[in-house]
Length: 414
Image (spheres, rainbow, N blue to C red):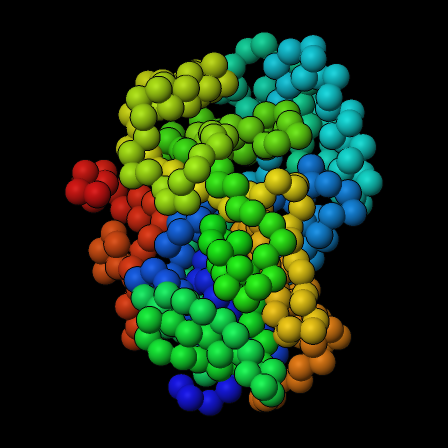
């Protein structure tokens, strides 16, 4: 490990795993460092698993550009790797006249982002598509390209594939300092030793501002935002046929009722500002009641089914809506910060942008030849918290995966 890596990536969530996946395939010698014991353990362990199209992302934003690029790539990649996905689509529902008045604006925004397949539904079309939806809707839009995937298995497979191509991935490795030597090589000091790299990518998520500060380049502050969810059993899968979206606001997409890729109906997320960068283990009864009420008024039949699991996710929001993709060209340091709830939806788009930055901004050529072959991943689950990818064991950290793969008897032991 004393050699100089082309790229050192700090942070092993969805974004970090996508970077090591893409850059290693391009031929870069990569090292990924994750402070937790397992990959996908912080913000990424509490996302929704939804692949958003970006229909409501700010026009001209880095976020929208990355989501659109990821949309072009991710389903073929998932298919090649043998990973699950479902093109479920989404229905945005207005429940009163004020919400109805906002739908044309949503439609125009989608058209401006070249999403010409977003369609207005008549009320008869809406209830034909979603017969279990509560009565009283005033208007609706159909967004066909929205999809759901496994939010844990996808990034884990990315990192696993990168390792098969020679990338180094270290967990339980806390970064404590970052400095350049006289030749401009980064020395990344950790509690497991010092590692060297030509370029460092900060994809530390909830601690992105802290890691930037170690290198003396901090330009933003993480303002954690908590989202919480209820999970129902698979017997509810027939109650919705698409993701049921509310009208988005300036700050949030709102509470969604959707199916996971494993057919569990899920309600969430909430939108709560918090000072804590860690995620609470249990939901408060008030939060549970709020989400239950949302389900009751939107899909009344849900109230006759029990909640089998709850979970939370803390997102690395900042004071701006857009991502912070900041190449510090004079330092060979790249910041990927503030990648919030759409991190899964944009991950390969962000990685594609990073690949271009490596060559065009940092003038860094890969040490190895590209290897774009994507063999199917051999996956098996030995229990609700352990999966084998090939001969390597991984701890499952996302509730969508471990509740979705097992039945009620297994859920009772979670």
